[in-house]
Image (cartoon, rainbow, N blue to C red; front, side):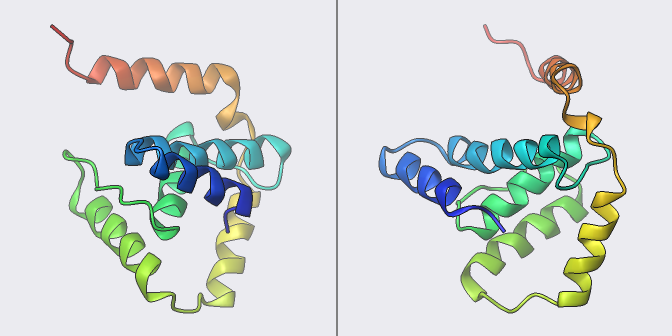
Length: 130
């Protein structure tokens, strides 16, 4: 569950006309802070970013799925976007199981060096600007 301050920051970004990815960045920053504080872990920097993007979609940020995403990732993105509208209750058992699994993961996955390496590899996969 995202903090109210994070949702307010994202809404402020939306009101200023900033892109959905900028709005979602607030949720990713919050997720990285949670992992660094030790509330739970993540297997990789990609997983931490994915959790943040999922929370953003569930909070109502109009973030489309990645263009080169697998069918599973697209399905999850659509599911998260629908969850923002439907507001169905979340299974307590499933939530606790997910949190328990995340608590077993390492917190070093969002270290500055790990995030730097993730940014470098993501940049290499992008096309060069002209």
